[in-house]
Image (cartoon, one colour):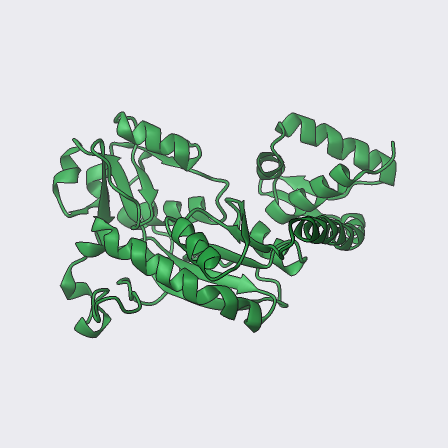
Length: 333
């Protein structure tokens, strides 16, 4: 067997996500197929490239050697394709990577209005997106860092914090008894089924800490958040969500009492100049969706100084509630 581009792409995906399951999802293939492909690559190269354990996959010394050669090759190939497409279309493409956010549409719209030509690469893994920026496969990434679960930020990247701490909310059926309150106590959801996406970097660990701190142990299902939305609407589950989530007639979005779960929102690029070119549009887009979100609009004024109201001054920079980013709470017995 001869090594091909798809083999190198698979190795980089496994290393970036730290998991065969997450890598298979990122690549759009079945996990058994990726496992078989990895075994064939290892046979071709003469040894194991990853150590497998219940916590995931990490490169062996041989794996690190192969990855040190594979990453530049993949970056150069991606750059070749990007530059060729840009030359064919007559304009340079701004390659943006992002985790899910309601601000994306407004951000892209503003960039186009400024004469830029953005493309979008979505990924549930912030760590994978940051690695792609460092490798030259993306120009900028907009990602979230789950509180208590630091991202692996390549040293060559420059960062800009959009929101230091965005408190996360809960999405629940509109007819749920707890939906009648402006904020929900986790004890009122202890008997519900929760759906959490374990492929989102740090999410499951943070949610587990939240449950332990509240001394609740609800039944948890694993699935992506698109599936979770559909199941929330039918009354099957509840799930965590961003405060910018738009409520629907069959779904309510409520603040969690005490704001026990938060994320930091970051923009990352290789240079400050790259950040300067995209950050103002991102800040405007986030402020727009935040002002329209009931979960933000209804945040109790007692939780933020008047000088930090999201509506002060009108039309000015959005300043969300939530306070500073916090370390993880200690595990409770």
